[in-house]
Amino acid sequence: MRGDEIHLWEVGASKPVIREDGLNKYPSYTNLRFAVVARTMERVMDMAVEQYGADLCFHTIVKRNYMGEAKVLIDPEVT
Image 1 (cartoon, one colour):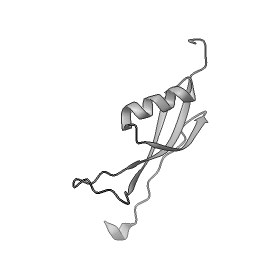
Image 2 (cartoon, one colour; image 1 turned 180 degrees about the vertical axis):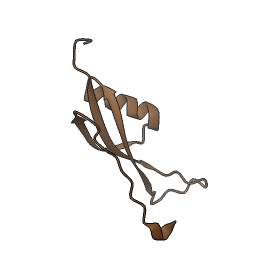
Image 3 (cartoon, one colour; image 1 turned 90 degrees about the vertical axis):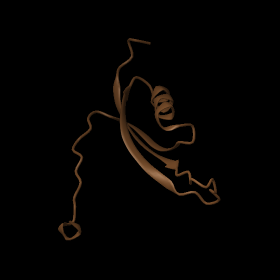
Image 4 (cartoon, one colour; image 1 turned 60 degrees about the horizontal axis):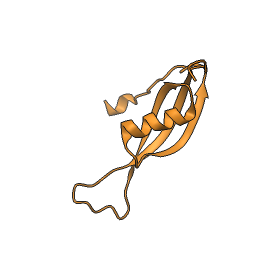
């Protein structure tokens, strides 16, 4: 197992927002986007569930060679 290659995995997921009053008939969701360094996709999923909880919903898990650039553009009219 230790001889397997290590990969960078890009994960897109969502997690339900739990209301304080416990009423979640139609829950809203928080979108999550994060990266994991691991050997297998199964390990990526295990680590994500450990970090974010069992109610995590996976949308995409993609093996990447690099992270690339992450940018946030902010409209000057909102500042």
